[in-house]
Image (cartoon, rainbow, N blue to C red; front, side):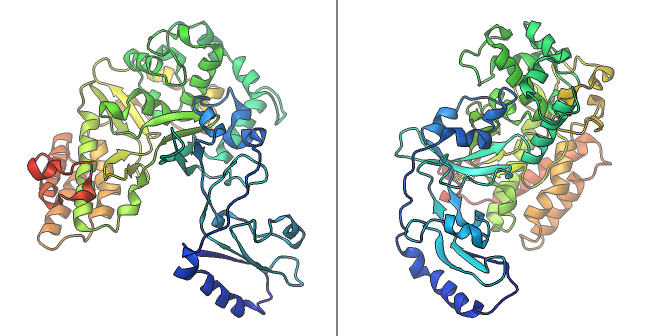
Length: 480
């Protein structure tokens, strides 16, 4: 717990006595005191429609988990650090200290702005989190950490994520409107329904490659009929999925699916390759408007300063995941177009997963792609919902089977493993990394270097309760 100070005045008189008060407020003793309870207000769900993106449906992901939000079975804890500095004319709109658990002190000066507002950083549960009396989290954030329950007793952490940033959503909405007129406002759904592409979707009985041509997602750059059938059969935003034919999809469902495929295929990948079948993705729990809810993970960058045995374990898992992306029972090649520290995440049991699947492409090694390069360059308004329409798409022919190893060995593993071990262990690891990251080597040489690095890291891992995903099995079986 910490304290946030917002100081927006040139008048510093009185700052030091207040800092003394701040120090006292932040002491362990003060943190242990009981916070006042948050008053319960009657929810106003219409207020939350914009935050959730429900006002944009059916240009949205879906509504499968909205009831959880409205029944307060999904809650977003907000910290007081999210609060904005207030001006003097706003101070009377704040709750009084006995009703506002964040409020500690406020001091005004003769200058136009409040000099200092101090708020203790602590979690505040929204008993009625959609109520206008309770400040919503900032809508410009890409993701939020929330809590989820099925029985109102036990709660678990979830990630609540937008397909793209609020700014990018707004820009895409403007492009939709200006595609038919010069006005910035319009019925987004009506415009999308009238497009040539969606009219084809309405008539189609099956999702075929020509219906997704020109969509910017790397997942759909090289689509096979087998992959598209899997999308329809496992689409989780409809109650009666299971058929490869789209007869069970209403016009509304088709528009939502097309919109999601156009903006960001991350939620689709989570649905069609579920974690319960062993795929390295977090569990998809549902969507509401333009937000999706999935199992919570911590980004890998938070573990860069971890101990050597934890770093070895995560590096070993990461290389195992990358290996499975090119070798799996369904004969799909998953490839990254880019990676960074937020691409991968770790569950609370220590298990590593692909946290962000938006940059994943898929090549069907069994059927191949059924689109030509000419068809891939097709453009319409759906091609521009996540990009500026000027982006150059990667050709399927340029994808290398070893590029995943090269990317993680260049961008991630050096930051995770650098300087973690004594010599000569560290020197050996660095040598394997150099070979694994060398894009001038052929695929087999890169793969061999990655495999050797995995085997070298295996005995450097510990076997204890910190690694719950393989403990206590690792005590009895070297495989773990």
